[in-house]
Length: 436
Image (cartoon, rainbow, N blue to C red; front, side, top):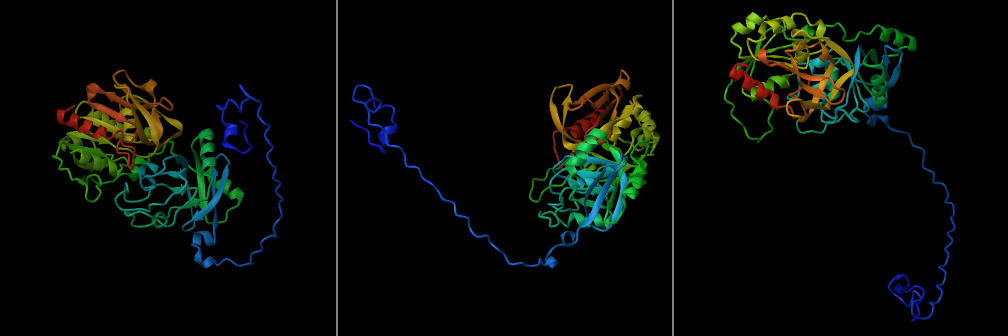
């Protein structure tokens, strides 16, 4: 048997005759023909010269205006301006979350700060009245890589740019936010100037940026907090058609407003608390006289060591009523117990911080937004560390069990997410029902 060139048998390893075993040698295979392709260059295509009708472009693209971010260390980053011409100074921080820009911008904790977002597109889902964390935008300015002008979400009631323009917030887009983040991670959080839409010389930029003020030694909590007590009754947002759960009214909880997010109040109501909110200068005696079954010290902006009066209020409540400190409230609890706080290099701002529960070993993914932390070496013996940040080892939770006090550095309400720590509210209300 011979194998013909081009037959299927030429590649079959089980064909013993074709392999030259036990028979005559196979016929040599004919070489495959070589195809030579001749490339003929095509004539270049010429398109007609046409002018671009810029009337169809939004103003943001039809006539882009320059924007600059100048940092106190002399660094300058360039992009484009959106909205009305405006300038802002403050401490420049970055947030790595991929969503939740409305919650961030309306979070009082961002007062005094220029917010840099690393999400590639910002503004996609617009804004609505349900996701806002306060009555206004608190960030001094916003810097993004790309700004979406046309929101696409069934809950949207408007666009992000219009909302920011209503509060006079300068917006920079087209910035290399990755370069800004890498710089801040090395240099640390820095004061800076965001100049949008106006012409400013390099010397003027540097001069203004050098005068910008950060958050050190600033009591921002009293600037953003309410000045009158109020009752809060709204629970967490539910989608239309979702199952409604009737919550049995539980303990009366007083929230000390140091810049509280509305989501904290909503989740306390959702867990069954009857919530009242009071200004940060409310005394311990007044809180106890109101019949509070538990007290929450809220999140807020600025340097915890500069917040006047609140640590003294906490000391007056220790051992008298169950206490829970959240973010800034956690730091103020640490100060009230005799500890110290210090400033992190560039803070924790994002929705993916891993935190270990020291009692169980469980790891929670948490949302965080703070520039300061509690110094573990400064805490007294009666205060124990309950949670630890697995990224840098900083303190994420403390407790003084004999005094009925607990503090957490992260945000358990985590709007819009993650939700690993939502059980903190139910656990706190259980303590309020038991009096500890």
